[in-house]
Amino acid sequence: MEKDLSTWTKAQLQAQLRKLGLKISGNKDELIERIHGRDFLTGILDVDREILLNLNTKDLLNTCKTDKYAARLCSDEKFLKLRIDRQYKGDTVEALTEAVTYGDLSLVKYLHDNDKVPHGDYNNIFWKAYYSGYVKITRYILNMGSWTLVELLQGAEKRINSVNAAQYIIEESGYFDDILNWDPSLVTSTEDDFNYIIGDMHVYRNDPELLEYLMMIRHLYVNLENSMFLNVLHALAAKRLLARV
Image: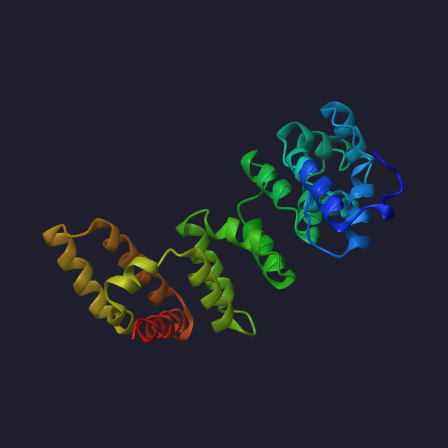
């Protein structure tokens, strides 16, 4: 590769970045810097793993964000295992702490998939990622199942901006989308109304998927103080109705 990239046109730089699988946006100086930054990788997997393993966490994640080839390596199971063994000396607690500190979704996923995350820690991981703005981590945790939603919504009750936090959890999870689309007026129901509707659905065996949503709402309605959860659902339902007008 020609070393004096300053003589290249912006179009030539962008073409080179495309070949390398890198982003092509930015001014000319940024494009040159991005190409130079890629020079330290060789294209040989085992060699490049070693190179990346010698970077500190911040530089590693910056490289993985700007380079598609490096990104594939960074999320590779073999590479992540090597990171745990070498960088953290097998200390998964330290690895998890740093993963959340820097927004390292690949490492969070790896620890989860290998049962290295204690069940109760997901609540802490979520809120640290939420306040740090690491959306990919929060969405990953929200998609893990309804049990997670119960714990997170109970945690939202204790936050300063509890309604905003709960609304984020409900909107991002998408878990309650179907019930709001089916009948938004249900979110104004009392506990007795929920029991009646659920009982009626059990008798007639109607819509088992909706039944699951209703049972979840009743559970949260009973367990969350001040009906904060229902207030949020009602606000979301109203917003959806306005959007349809």
